[in-house]
Amino acid sequence: MKAAIILFPGTNRERDMALALQRATGHRPPLLWHRDTELPSGLDLVVLPGGFSYGDYLRCGAMAAQSPIMQAVKEFAAKGGHVLGVCNGFQMLVEAGLLPGALLRNASLRFLSMDCHMRVERADTPYTSRFQRGQVFRATMAHGDGNYFADAATLDRLEGDGLVALRYATPSGEVTEAANRNGSARSIAGILSPNLRVLGLMPHPENQVDPEIDGTDGLPLFESLAGSFAAA
Image (tube, rainbow, N blue to C red; front, side, top):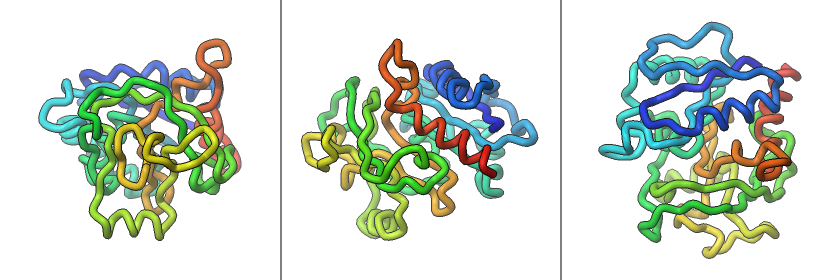
């Protein structure tokens, strides 16, 4: 799998993401600068990592969505390329129109920095094939604007088309108000594009890829990607 990570002013999770991909694939992906206008040839995956691009001015991810390289990312996605956006990267994806909805201020109006649990809603995607449907895994949330919002029709379409990839839940898999720390609509933690190749999620699975640091709960997501391309 040939991946690349895009670096924006204010990004701070690119090295964590690079390590996660390296552990899954054996190769450390290159970092691309947001002012680049083209992606390297032969890429399988583009990653928009977490952080605070442009200091979260205007709206989180709004300025990054207008960076020169994002046009190339849109064209890559339109041709069937895989794009993963985590936290600030998820915000960029919705601001760029690659995924529907919006990320609003957390319901508590406070920045959340804590562990959460997510339930895998489907295990037949390039990002979740190493999980079981209904499996719960731990990840870290670190955001002030992670409250996923969309109108009722969009939410119904996401549910009906099976595009909700991950949902906030208790460690035992129950979807409860208490487990939904940021107040996201229908406890949605991550959504997919209709072709299942674009994934946006707020928590950070790249935090949990090393047994000596914080466990390996998040590693199957990256191994799923590596396995999908190896099978292809």
